[in-house]
Image (cartoon, helix red, strand yellow):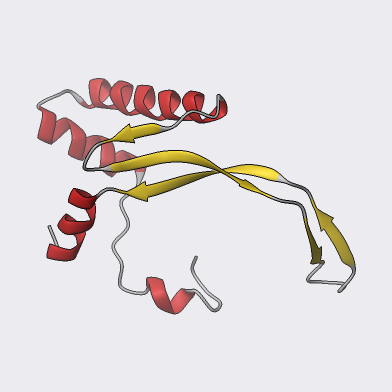
Length: 108
């Protein structure tokens, strides 16, 4: 989010893109970038497939990927103010684990 109300919360945060993440994985794991990219793709595809089956992916210490159900609600079109129905849906959710929370709190 670059602007609006939430923009103030993200100012000064560094962002890592996919290419930088692959390079970091390759460096840490001693892999070639192509191998690191395959590993990252396998990870994201596996998590997406499990969530699609409504299963959890739990990585002890890191966190848990799960599905959260949102009920249908009534909303408003921001441009016209017209009432509209927002359908029920399942959305992905991530809950960080204790080790990840501690690492973030310590700035590591």
